[in-house]
Length: 295
Image (cartoon, rainbow, N blue to C red; front, side, top):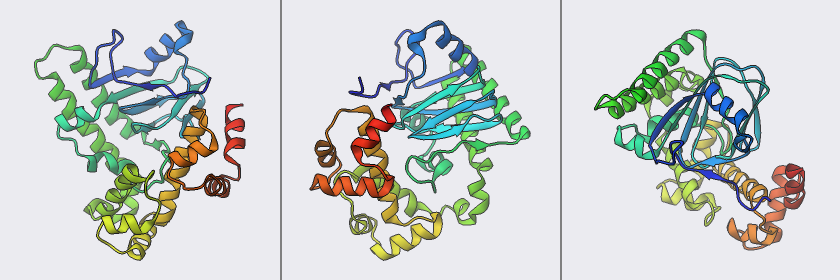
């Protein structure tokens, strides 16, 4: 049944809620092999996930319907709400860091720092970041310190874990090629794009027009389109459409809503308008896409 995709909360094996957990990929996959019910299926989290891969013997990481080959010396970043599935032919070697928004706030890790990872990417586009062997060594050192604090009984271990996570994310930002390609990126002058994407996340069901988002951001629609296009290669309108398409795909795969119900859910006044919009952007009708992906 495809009634609803499973959304996981961050908790220990005993069901106790936590804000931060670090595990080795070997431990996770070995546990999955012992318990078939834990086999990885498409799912989503209400928390952030960072996967640091040291050695990947083959397979793919599927994030929002896009497949990314598993490669050694790479970092995968999964945002809350993204649908993902990791399929590996053998046990990959690396670490998985899971942490909540609350953990970020408690430790002074800002949205600005986290969003820098994929600030210029379209919705649903989260490619892994390749890293050098030197960078891998730096990340592993930080992770090993995290493991030491997580397993220890230091009174300030959560503060230490927060400081180490912040250092880890700072190193991701420094390794990200986007920061080297865009000088203004480091200068912090792209708040408009960050605020625009955040506003889309909040309002995409109710508002589809660039004019609305431009007014909320105190700029003209023409300026917003040109600015976003100059920084990302896509217009503001295309960003709004990307968000609608990725949410439509999620609903088609993981719910049994009809095309009519789905259209109204996403703010289209007429189902025919939604059907035409979806087919134009995916080359498939909504129902054809559902059947194809489920099969």
